[in-house]
Image (cartoon, rainbow, N blue to C red; front, side):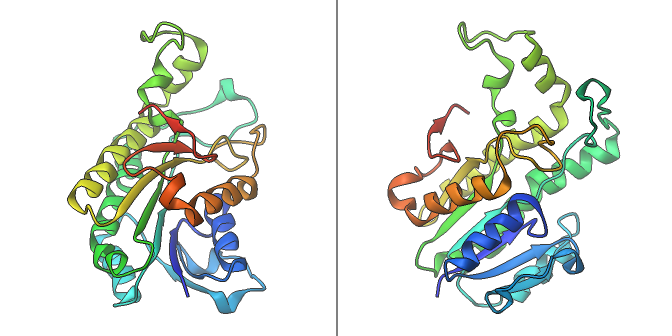
Length: 245
């Protein structure tokens, strides 16, 4: 039986990915900040719920110990935090630029995925699929600060929005780099970055064009055909189209 480990598994895209894996016969280790937050599921025999605090090195090590010597076919680094709370009016959005919050964002979004992946590398390497999927974002690409036509940095409205959210955007840029570095360090393991699209989650808000379930279904399809649909060391969208870093 194939095994996946998904972080940030209690809600949103993480929960939807757990659903996709489990209903397709995978054993899933669902890593949540609090195990009690994981909602009841009919496929409980396929899911092993555990806790991890991605800001705590001891907790990350405890998750690795929980996995033990079992093979992990697919590690999905999904957990992430944003730099602002969801509000009805985007113009009223309050970005938290405190050092404490920025440190939290980088620890969860950038540093922890690399540390966890490094520590689970032996488990991934002994599996059949040998795949690491890191959920990134188009917001972490330099293209989001540039004019599409000229390629020059631009103060267009969308670009200004992304510039204001530099803590979150930069954390995704950093995780892109660190996970590409992982792939170079471990050439026997495929490491890919996926932009899940604009989803109706706490980060994406209610006006987003995709549900987490729609994105998860597309991502799962990419995972099952990863040899041909997920180019190693690239950022792709949830449909498998290559994006500029």
